[in-house]
Length: 436
Image (tube, rainbow, N blue to C red):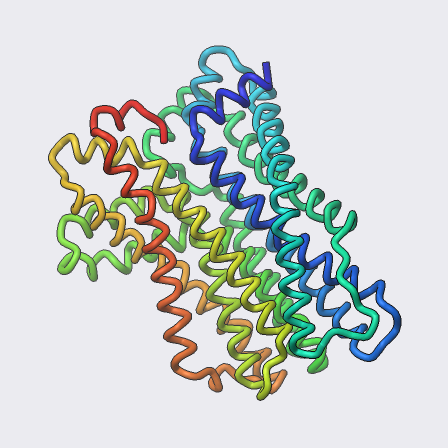
């Protein structure tokens, strides 16, 4: 029964399954590469530079595992939330809450197991590129040879299983406890559910914890402050992720008067859509915040380092690329779920250009929320800790600010509009009764 429900769920929302699979593959890729470098360096003979490479690899591994659990949990929650109507219909015809939860757990486990070998293969290639780059820059210790073996595979497997199950179970628990009639009404507008009091209190507590961590790192030694920057950034990220729905609504309210003129009717629809779907959009805002905050922090560190270390540059690109791919994947999932909505607009007279304009203006709002919150998080960390480590935020050149902001906007607009070519080819009447 549970396996059959899982198959039906995947068939009803293939885009959600594909999006989750892609995010899990990305996570396994990065975890595999980081663990391979850390374990290989730790197992090399004692030589100058071995400890530094091993510690750097371990630091990358810990941060990557943290990121993977956080962002994959969000993607899984989004995937389950997108099927809220289907779950409500299953409840209405007799499926029990425990069956919905087991269905999600089975689907999450199967997706993680399918993604694991693919991610492990890509991770092995990424580890080789990483190792070759270190060799080319003369930072490979004597006797250090790359080995991508069972430790990397088991680490990737553990992260995928834990993050997918955790994200799926949390979302399924909420959906399975909702009465079918209430769930059907709430899912009439995708993402129209209101964030609860528990989430609001959790966001406040997470923010207080992030502030306390920032203060503790500032009062510690210079070395400890520098090493704590990624973890402190992640603490702020957790708070922003929990506060995502309110950040989205606040941004929509601020953008509303600005879009009335240049946006016209499409701008009005974009503002209304962003307000109604604020909870869904928070899943896309979080990785954009991650890209922006990490980029600013790393740009500050590298600009004050004189001759940047290749490992630091590679790590920055690794984190930014991982978060960027997850953000793009999430935005594509969010656009694909709106086939019925866009088909209805087209059925009542909206043209393709108007649909594209609505998506573009919504992308601007999403980018403002993500890039804005990421900038605030980056400044909240790097203003006190940058001064402590001798790399003040004021030393960041103007081109770095411009590149960070422009990259965030282009990422959101490109990913949001990517599925439209396919979606607009579907006839309106067919789109209103079809799942993407």
